[in-house]
Amino acid sequence: MIKNKVEQALHLQFNEVLIDAIGTLQEELEKGISEYALISLLQAPPFSLFDESCLSNQSTLFKTHFILFHCLYRLQKQYLMASKGYLEIHALRIQLNVFDGKHKATDDEFSRQNAVNVSEQDELAKYYLDWSNYKTTDKEIDTLLASFWERFVKGGHDNLANASSGDINAAKNQLAIPVDITLSRSVLKQYYRKALQLAHPDKGGCKERAQAVIASYKLLLPHVTASD
Image (cartoon, one colour):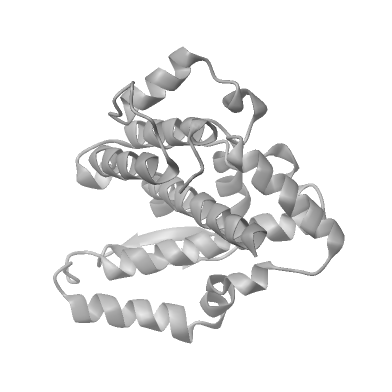
């Protein structure tokens, strides 16, 4: 039971970071991007959210695809709820169609109704938003998954778990965290959310600054207490 709760928390944590990372790529989304190209961007710095083996075989390919589409459909719903636009999701083309002003953010009924339509009426959205479809009883895949989440907790790369005190302090500074504070996961998340909101292009920031915030959060994750 405890193991399942820990795994569920790690899934949620990783998915939230992935959604934030994709959200900084609005220019690429508006132009349209393939699933493979999007995964390639998320593999590269400053994100490094998927490792080189994520598409190496059928099992890891499916898992990577499912995680990505799960997060894309959640982002699609967020965009609709904010009356920001409609995110088209296909393997060959993922594209954000920004609303032209006819749909105002204050039009809650429009936003919520469309979000419901996507999440409840679209069969593909139903499938990918149901996290139980991610799970499998295949022992080999379970082993791969355990390794995947372990790498994420370590920051995705072993060198993040061994980051220098200078790197850690720089990451804290990026998130406006006092250097001498003792961090837990929940406290770190609070600082991260505040910093990301200020850095996000939609809030007057820029893509590069938002990506730096995400990278700093990812670097700090292996160095916080897991008490909460």
